[in-house]
Image (cartoon, rainbow, N blue to C red; front, side, top):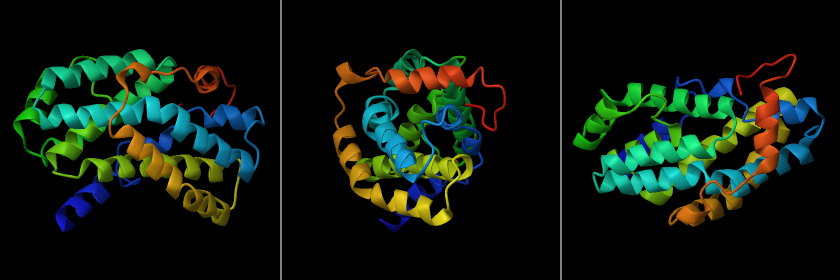
Length: 226
């Protein structure tokens, strides 16, 4: 359990050098349009991202990638990458997911040995290797418990959104920690639902998030890449 916990902590560390700090997942647009403008609206944004967006996209794909890795099914991993390409309608979000996944894979390929990860890395297609797919693959290869991995995946996403909210709105550091603490139960609920995702629900439309991410590409001034 100790080794698994340490592996999970490193895999989900927000300071992992893959560039996650460069992306706001559309939050910058929400702030510039004054839709997110205080602690309450920032908390609502993060809650909706976790429960209505990530649950049916990245968390679901990470869960299925974990299962595929356990079954040594490289073809299924490639198909999940293709699915991830399809459900990320905003080009910035597709590119961000690809960049994060590619960098994560590059870091862990020399550290995390296994036939499945080696075949996946050598056969991946251009613009593949999405972050959620690579995360699920690595978590399975490292022997991390699946539910714990999903907790970590969603917590990492929540930390990123809280950090961005503190910078962009802006909020106080205490406000950010209070928001993060309030999300514990929601993270647990979403992780439990993502354990056995409904494949028919993957890509469930979140129009507001998609539109704001597309609008981000045209913002006059930007601090974030997405």
